[in-house]
Length: 230
Image (cartoon, rainbow, N blue to C red):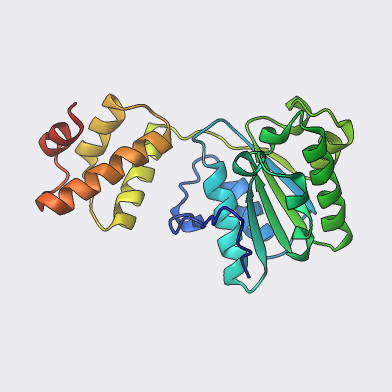
């Protein structure tokens, strides 16, 4: 029961709760798992900088809800904000709606009003709205004060960053999802030589996986150096 968006968006297959290294986010992860099961407050807000895992968690929540037979919808607001706000009509029919990057519509009055009304409709139907942004509701540049207030009614969680040991765990977990092994020595080398945000690390790891399959080589440090020109 995943509604298709006009841009043909598909949830990432790797976006599962089991693929998220929680670190200091154990409580948040437990709350989101409960939300996917239909429990908790009507509105749930999580925030953090780029690369902290917001999109992964929202898509994982959708996939977990769908696996339990609950309808779920994922709305990437940064991609949708160039369209008409009427796009938000009707989504309240889904028990769980996950609105990613809500900051993308801040200052766009018609979009803010559309999201405010969607939030009200979801509450009236006893559904759940999960929202993400880089900052908490009160710190976003909404022109509609009632929207910031409404989004902050329920739990507001900051996603805590991973330390290097946890980043290494995340890299090794993603490598196993690709079907390869990332030796600890190689993972630590990547952490020393590459940007620390996970999207950048995962993008390099995907390149390495393709190269290792083509060359039938393990992910050793010399092989990584040659592929990434480090």
